Picture 1 (cartoon, rainbow, N blue to C red):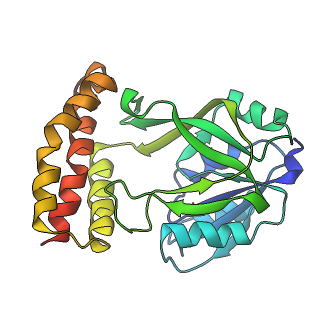
Picture 2 (cartoon, rainbow, N blue to C red):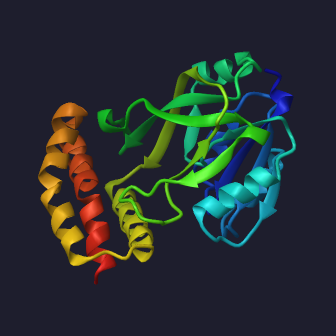
Length: 246
């Protein structure tokens, strides 16, 4: 696939630390669109200096921002990448080798916590490279409900998978993880209408979810980092339910 047929789009807000890594990992020749939510740091100057087209826009929500970005893309193919992500060498090469015979391509993402990849978040399949005219954006809140959060791309055509890994550096410290946890649970709770019985149900499901993350998904082998993430992942729906009825 010729890179000049692809536009990579990135949503940003104060991403001067991570954005250079994301942009430099892209295949040479790919067009770049940055939709920026009025950053107060050097995100926009860096993006423009890198040759990206930048649109500054007031933040609404994740789904609306993704849909807006897609509507600005004129190339036949779209690559969605976050500012805190990076294509490894194999994935970058696989994108260039991809065939036009498919309508979309799934990539495998591994998320890092405090500098190390986590088994709990390893090889997550995500549709990221798609025909621009054959894709839509939907939300999938982790606790259910109607929050415009945890958005993903959907393609109804032929979908294949690319080699390589998308590296995700969302949580450099435990503090950044807790802050994102608090922010996302609040967003989901604001869109919920939760009866008290749901809080009881979600609380009862915490122990089996925790055990599943530790044993079945391998978090136990990651040591204290894995246990920490497994616990927060297990209590996430219960925290959303608790915040929704406060």
